[in-house]
Image (cartoon, rainbow, N blue to C red; front, side):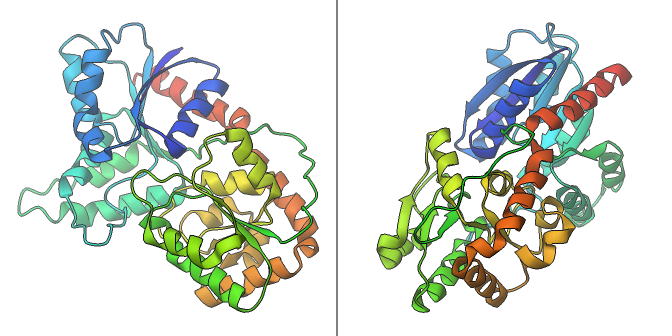
Length: 366
């Protein structure tokens, strides 16, 4: 088949997802993208941009769009030109459950865009069961904000066409001999976005506590930052000083992967994470995970490793991180087993499931 992939926010995990699927799919994927900035305007206006940029949909058998695409607007505009192929909506994030930034108030219009996009798509998939369940659970309360004529049928209609397809990651399946841990201080990896929802304050609080205890470690502060540098990162650069081995987004993928291969542990303190590609990549490269026992993380990590590498409190985070940094070689077997467990997320294994979902939508005509 020939599939048109619409990505209005071509950056970060959205970019990795689009490129990974395009490279590994058995179908021909044609990417139509916009730069990763002004996400609110993308939800409002991307359909208008693509309406002018894409002259005809007639060569395509199907359309794959992601959540920052206003699918209802896109379908309405292009239907004026002729038949619109079946549309598959992939939901990385949604605006019903996404935490608000400090000082920000809820704009219900973006939540309704999510709803109308889900209804206008022929099928939709979420990147984790946790994400799907949270979205469906939030729908009734969101709809109940309307003063009258409540569309109480919406949750059932959305649930009926929903599924879960975990995203792939851009590494090959098969045996992966891990490099030995480098000599010298163990390296802590942060490879998440530099934004409030990733909760960097708790991460740095744990590092400060361990530094005060005299533990020897370095930290690589990787990950993208789309606007200004948040204050916790500015403070950390000054307070941790020479312990900071890397600071800022690494544009070279090979150099980024090299940092992961040198890492001892990857830590997340996120309050918002619907899958966690950055964690999967780091664990595959040989980093031990230290993750909160919430969000999608228990889905990513095999259950046998939950007690050792998930935490329930700031105290437990600090204690478990201290244990890893004090004697990282004691975790050599877990490091290898966890890396092997991440193999299931390779795009070469995940793409056939996405292909099958797209084929099923086209075959059924919806």
